[in-house]
Image 1: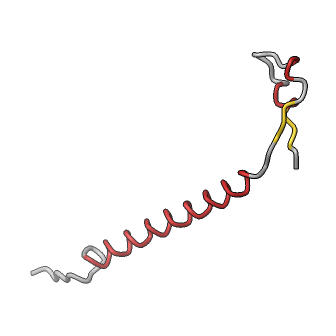
Image 2 (image 1 turned 135 degrees about the vertical axis):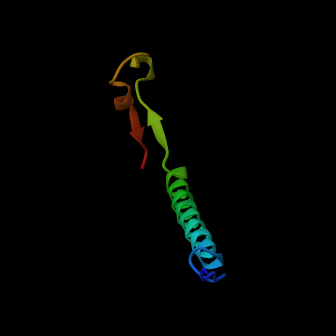
Length: 68
């Protein structure tokens, strides 16, 4: 006869641990994404010499300058 317990790690306890772990990971990632978005929402940039930018060039990033 097997020992079946509803509070073993295979039962409700294991499920609750998994759900709490997943929700905490989602909460941390959401918090980090919101703080990153808030920090970069006020980080303006301008493009210098836009007439000299070529479509297929690796030097295009040199024309973008942070205003801050």
